[in-house]
Image: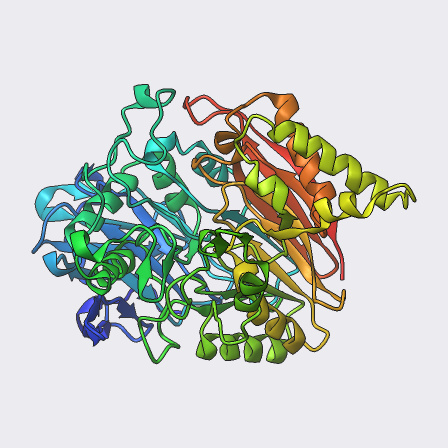
Length: 565
């Protein structure tokens, strides 16, 4: 590999693509045919400043990785350097870029034609301003790996508390951080996540109103990326990311969202385009192999051990969610109508193109593990209707206790269980229609297309930790689901209206008793999932931080499970 490379001739600046009105910010591509770069600077005289959102890297492969930063102003020439050693005595790639207001002065360089299995260091600087960034660390992937550790996270709400879980991941043994969405939240200051308990942190959303315009989304990204813990995680680990709903608006689907009113907030399509442009500026992803740069679903092969298949279960194809309230009539709940709509084979979460792409990827994969990195729970989470309708009511604990007692007697084959008691337990519906349970027919289509292959599904979105055994309708086991808690967004403890440990423990045990296939559930703690893959096993550890209200915290493993195939 040559020792120095130049951006002036070897760079290709991709033209911005207009795709259905959506302008996506370009990456800049560097390959190993660049000329020598003329050095005329003294790096030791520069100060760390003006790179206020830090540095980051994304989508590593065995031959490429994206490095990123943002400068404070437009029309500045920024030099970047990549080295195989921390003191930059062996620079293997470097170049110069000019910041542009059209992409909010963010810079994303996609380094290609690299050697595999490298530890890399990178930095940016502007000699004219005497400014330099911190030094980032990243990797290229090995061609053949015996072990890979992923830190899996989601749901970081700035005004809900400190990002101590990001700090924990930065200091973990993870090779890569996989972010499953809700990287930020669209709500205004004092909205979701803000409480009397965390008000002293003064982490109020900027802008103070709900995000709607491109400038709104950019301001919010800059606020989130000002957080020191998030900056550290990006500085120390490469990220592989996918969006969920709050990067746009709550409960987004293909042409709308629960938290969008076109009468008062304008066109949803315009808002979505603005949100996705800002996303691509601050969280760039590899698009070299995609014909359509607006598509985020992609496969990253990790050392021929894992095919990490990142899905878009939110924007590209999702039909509008079903709403239980629509099935209540003057005579009660319309169970037949609900079941008919729920089992409609035309309803889709992925869209036909993405679903077929996914099936083809799984069927053709030769990697040991087929891992789906996606947003929402795939496991069937049917909860007794009586329990759902009593949630938050004074008699909730009593009903919960009664249902668990009945279910325990049923499992023990108690002959005295009455038909009425069985009906109380077995009359169950999905607790979350925004998840795969709301698109059950498509889930079954996917399961049947696996042809005996088993999958590992990673999920976020719910703010709670879960471990599910995935089964098709005929009871065949098709894989395992590992779902991470949130970085800071509140979990079930908020909706239970009580943080009493005994109540939370009872609720968790009740859920694993009442829900078929649910092996583990944590209802209240914040943290992330650490998943270590080898050729023979998958070790999953749910890591929790003990506080999001203080920078002094402790992180520890709260639960672990080993899965073999």
